[in-house]
Image (cartoon, rainbow, N blue to C red):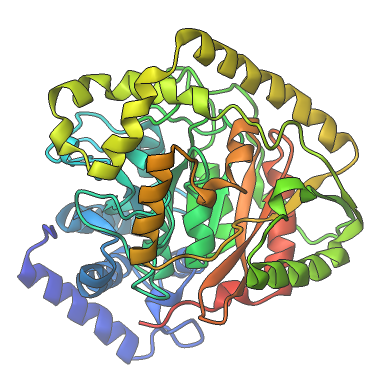
Amino acid sequence: MIDYTRGEFWKISLAAGAMLADGSLSGEPSDLAALSLQQASELLRKRSVSPVELTTECLTRIERLNPILNAFITVTGESALAQARQAEAEMRAGKWRGTLHGIPIALKDNMDTAGVRTTAASGVFANRIPTADAEVVRRLKSAGSVILGKLNMHEFAFGGTCIASYFGAVHNPWKTDHIPGGSSGGSAVAVAAGLCYGALGTDTLGSVRIPAAYCGVVGFKPTHGRVSIRGIIPLSPSIDHAGPLARTVRDSAILLQAIAGYDIADATSMDAPVPDYSRAFETRKLSLRLGLPRTLFYENLDPEIERAVSEALTVLKRFSSGMQNVELPEVKALPVGPTRAEVYAYHAQYMAKTPQLYQPETLARLRPTADITAATYIEGIRSIERLRRAVKSTFASVDLLITPTMSIPPASISEAETIELEQIQKGQLSPLVRNTSPFDVYGLPSISVPCGSTRDGLPIGLQITGPAWGEEQVLRLAYAYEQATAWNKRPPTW
């Protein structure tokens, strides 16, 4: 629900339109919605555009497109405009907070926002209003971001299609009868469709990178423990991550810079120095050792994905001192199942009291989590820690790993519903997470960048993964690839 007044909205819209019509953005991109986060920030610094104008542009597009895409659950229009006015006043007074100051951002709806409902796309929490912000939200606000609202998702982040939502399915902006991926589907759709300049999502088995690949944007999952997950409705804290979705690699680095860092109140947070990620974009010749984990990741690929990734590897050779096949530890037998005990620990009370408020698919996935024994869980957690140590040896011979983000293109919503039901009935893990989930278990930083499209025009993603705490190196190669290609410059047309 948009909560700004209609009179105020149209007054500001007309002012923004007048600014564009009189040529005050001459020499700059004329369409505010097409700007990258960095470009928008540069315009703000030059005072060629104001935070109110950027916010109004986003709210206008949300009002027009959200009925089609269903990316937002809650739009906080009135408070967003108030934050934009405050940012504008601060800028006029010479109080610049940094690159995110005055930039409209949106949040996945499993991130607590004080005074604004946080639902996790579930009827269980349909009217839940937190009293405090999640740590990542607090950091964005501290950086001066304008918060536009809360984004739709797969219910409780327990799936990769974004069909199962109390608020209805999310639609892919490239082909609206197709899934956007998930669980951070609303985040990827909002960025791709120009409804915001960046968004946050969460990633437990691939939930940032899957929708990034399917919606043609950049999705970055940092090292486990790099970004606080305090105040985020959990799925499985042992492998839960939070990270940015953005239009460009540089934009994702800007967002990561703001939210990264130690949080003493978060048991999963690690006290590791946060580098200046802007150094990843310094001009230098790259000569990286690239590893190709063929087992699992390159098996049974859709032919169009195989073609796109093969072409991407040809481009990446420019930045490589060599490519070699590598093997990752226990990649086909990763201990994902035992973490379901953590899922059950959170949901047991709600399943007992109000099971009818869950989406049927979610409840069907949740019920078997009660069967995980304590011994199985403990052994699974030990296995995760062992694998995170074991995978370090891989990076003795290579600097980064290159894989397809997804093995299959996005299905239609009707096809995905049938496939998902069959998988639940068989107790199978979704094929959507095949290429992404290992890096959650390993806890490694991993980014998805656009690298092509199918004959139907649906995006294809390339995944670049580095060693623990190696976000800067991942960003460096992702940026070099992005600059050598034009896939991120091809947004869906609305």
